[in-house]
Image (cartoon, rainbow, N blue to C red; front, side, top):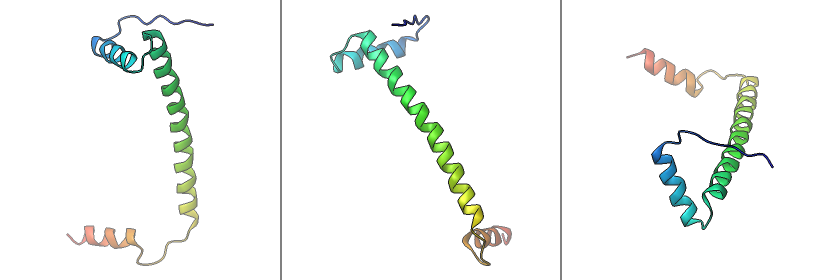
Amino acid sequence: MPSLTIRDLPDDVMLRLRRAAAEQHRSLNAQAIHWLAQASRQERSRAEWVELLAEAKRSRERIPRQPGDSADLIRRMRDSR
């Protein structure tokens, strides 16, 4: 299995790692792996969110604007100041 060495780990990160490991009854190594696995899943989720938001924008753009929709109303109110 591959390994990873992390140098110059900030003290505050190490402290949080130690606390989390103790709370979860894990070794520092197991806790670090757990955090890395969580972060990698969140990264994928962010990419999925970006695609979802892009699809929502494309869908919204396909809907024709009606005169007096909320965006136009807000724009007119802003311009009248």
